[in-house]
Image (cartoon, rainbow, N blue to C red; front, side):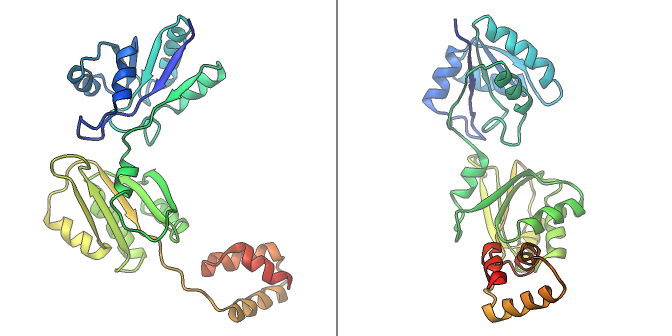
Length: 270
């Protein structure tokens, strides 16, 4: 028998948000590898899924990879799920997948629930472009390095409710008070809430309201003001006098003014 391995998304909150195909696949599996068997058992009990469960999380992923490969080589069918959402999106599984690919085992991924896309679908935005960074680091320095890197792109991250206000205050201290923020919590659940406002107002709101559940945040891209070409050429000339290369000039000016790097490079060659 050929080995069958599936990546199966599970609901991020509301247990009804599971596809018919996901239920069908999970029912056909011999085993389900999951972050926490207690969490997954709630889902399998609801839908009458009889596969055997075993844990596979970031602390035992390497060890479990050996077990999964052994079972697959015996012709068993296995699915990987996370506690909520799509596996490998800020969840374990990367180590396991590398091992499976090294063994040339076919991996089938199913579409399904994901907090990032669910959140994005209710946010008005000017651009489809976004950067997803998973869980944002705890240290202020690392947070600012990432947010500055993506300041001209809609930047999405996960955060714990106990740290949200602290992270928003870091943003307030390092960006404008009217920096636009969107916060989603308890998505698909009874008390689902999405707030879109300035970082200053969002902080005030959550200082008065209890924070619970999974949190998704988007820092809206900082609007770029088009720098007049004549001004760009003046900056290019100054840097040329200092013997910077066209490549370095393009990199420096694009970073300072948020201007397209290729456009600057072409101007340096004129």
